[in-house]
Length: 234
Length: 234
DNA sequence: GTGCACAATATTGTATACACTTTGGTCAAA
DNA sequence: TTTGACCAAAGTGTATACAATATTGTGCAC
Image 1 (spheres, each protein chain N blue to C red):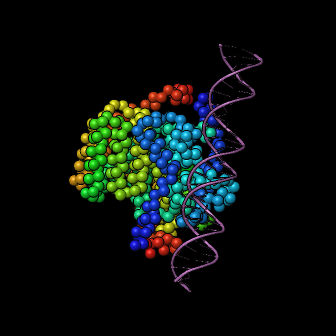
Image 2: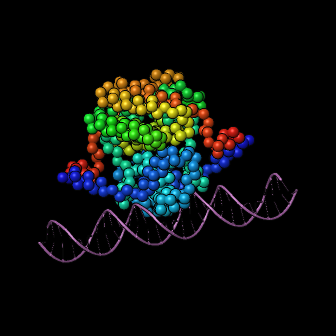
Image 3: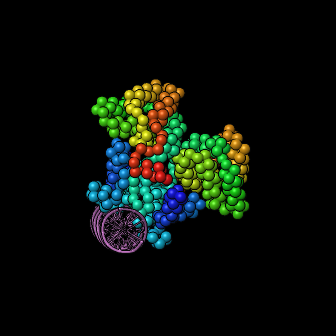
């Protein structure tokens, strides 16, 4: 029973309010309701969420650590604007880490894991059917995170989670065309390969899936107007 | 001249005091002057560094994001105690990332980079000659960070920096025997390979160097007594 | 009308004050 | 002696107040 007691004590929620704010802001960024470059004023956010600036500052600092927002001293926090170089690096790093994770996931996945992945894909289909672009993007990232967690390499999984968060911003800035259908099929066959414990195929499918995503980006200068001034006149 | 103006504005230092505290604590951890598990009381640190708890909390939060300290709600912050599983994962991840970085560094290193690495090795020798274990450990990690930066993959370099920071804690907890001489030689030949642009050799040397480090660890339960209760009764 | 200096405003950085939780100890009862 | 509750002290979580900095608006000189 000792184990149960420990679990209960550890599970005693007490979610810090800064975490809730952090999650709310993350989700808004992932769903592209906050565009890159948007100013995140502390007072403004404090009023919106009904907490003090202390909490907001804590949350913004967390997001800054995850490179989702950039802070400038005495100027404030802004939704991050990954540069083309950063965008390229994010995907290069994903192409290094995720195929290995897919391989390990194929090795270690339990029937429960498979069921979870398949249920997740169902949710993705629903979001696509409803043409809910933001939710579809979010769920797509979540699938990658689930796979990395199944691989049971929590550090790499943490890195991947980090990279996927940044990928949302990159997609917001540099996405070229709609290829949702392609993605849908890629996820489906990837989960199949994991289900079949086909490590080589899972690794290959993940790699080519990421290459497809990467090549669907137009890594030119950001399109926003407020930065183009700097880009042009710099 | 626009460029120069922008540079000057951006370079206008203004290091936030929380960063200074953060750096001081990091260095103390790296040099093993703060043992894993040590309580980091906010008031105590505030008095030591002559700033308010606000600054200390900010710094501790940064360190928590880097997994150098662990915070427990309403209980405070403690120097992190990586578990054997975490330790294994840290080195497995380093073995995945760093050999690739060494290869890219061999490809991209400029003569200035080589000179910097060689100068760094000199400093390592000095620290070893003075039997300054803490400084030697710190410099050893710095060399790995320099190499990853030369590879010009800033995201991977950031991950490696993160992993090396955690490695300090792991070494503090699980180091088995002294093999400083081995390390000295490994670093030397690694820099040689990079100097000679020998990518395969740089990659192999880095890999075997990391494997050596990894195998010099005794990944059993932590030795501290205050945790053994939990470990026994869990 | 244009450009610059300066003041007013707004926003961030830091310190302090207060509320809540944990912790350690004391005392009473079994 | 041991167990339990309760109280006091210490420490963390949050809000607020004040200081420093940046931004914006105004007026003056040219």
